[in-house]
Image 1 (tube, rainbow, N blue to C red):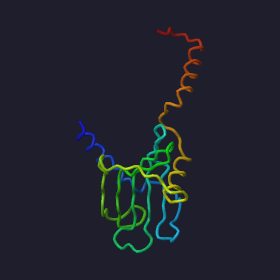
Image 2 (tube, helix red, strand yellow):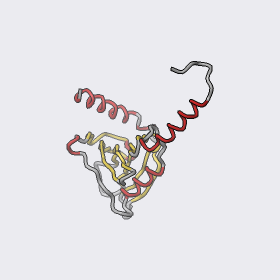
Image 3 (cartoon, one colour):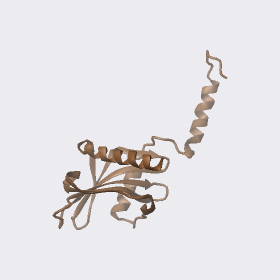
Image 4 (tube, helix red, strand yellow):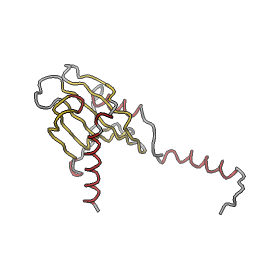
Length: 163
């Protein structure tokens, strides 16, 4: 079963890159030395509870002949202000285009939560991603809203008999 899930995940990520032109990159920040620019794709991001799943692009502007951009898929823990890179892909051209130089799905044993320094690029990525959160799946904190909706539904007379 584990192997099946890994294969499905790899296929999903592989075919996601075929849609690279459909990403909607929004520039977030540049490095202080102007060596790289960082972008987020808010159109394809997903939120489950306090976790945000986000595509991150970095364009390397200086001193790199072979790798011009990186596209990473990350899990962001908005509650604890942490980031975890799940997938790394290096490209030969800017904006995730050109020949793929490296593609790596990080193994479960190697996944690592990173806590950013204040006023760092990672801090800006986490803050921006979490500020743009639109929940696609309710967290446990939202149960009070669900209870209220159920009560309203119960109070509403229905022509159908409830079991």
